[in-house]
Length: 402
Image 1 (cartoon, rainbow, N blue to C red):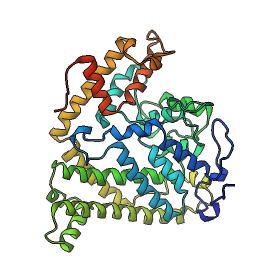
Image 2 (cartoon, rainbow, N blue to C red):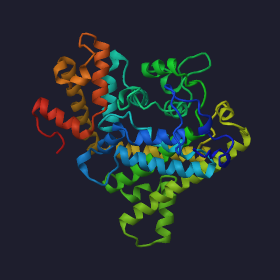
Image 3 (cartoon, helix red, strand yellow):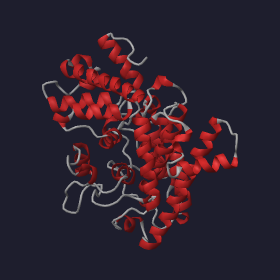
Image 4 (cartoon, one colour):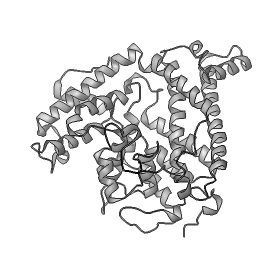
């Protein structure tokens, strides 16, 4: 029998033995807990494997040392699990959410996502969070008894609500979805398996979300430096990064550039993790949630940066946006990437025979909304490499990225 670890967890942690279950009921499978099984299903999914060749900022062929969605997800999982252990949270649920958070991303990072969203506007748009939900509830087809991965309520809740509630108490979309409304994929699944969209997710989901911010900013800083998009000296006036750099230069005068970068980045990560732990303890003491359900009802996140670290993080993000994401070299590549996505979408929309048979089965091109969503699902699942290969095959233009 699976031995419950509930007695070792904080009272406000998610309890695998008391999960709200799966859409399709399954028997327990000792020795793994329900959350361990979720993590394992995510790791063994095709969508997770494809993250190896999906990029965030750099296209896959630009170098083996830059982050991909896969390496980023592993780094998020490491940070999230470290925080969860100190806070007494369920590490397996935290890790599952960290590993799954990027499953819905398109090829070519945010540029590919923006272009696909623009192209899909007549058909409901594209949202990577909703796409992650589609993948784990519908598009992964591995099991005999259901589509998707049939993950627990807690994992799906965290996947959808890791950044906070999606609706207010009157059912109106809020936050990121205020203007456009909730994506159809979230509405559809929520009707079948209520994810309690008006309340915050578990502390485990909040931890995975903060770990994503920590890893994203610190490691993009690392990649940007190693790519030569900006120099170490440029970090001097940036709060947090500048402080970390000053510590390294003082302690290790004459240290080579590569080690200086690494020592600076690791200090940035440590500072952010330390801040999250201190602020989260303060909020937990103030709110005193006795259960995971009580924590969801507090009306504010409990896993958070302090106000000062939030501001430091904002300044770092602004620096990265200016110096890295909007760098002429990056913008040029992303413009070409958007062209690839646009060309492929238009080609598939005009000729169903270009789609693999299993993708067009049951979705006639005459039913434009359903067919467009199938095209979108196919495109969103592509790796950078596969998208470029398909573009070359269809248009015979040769590599766009030289």
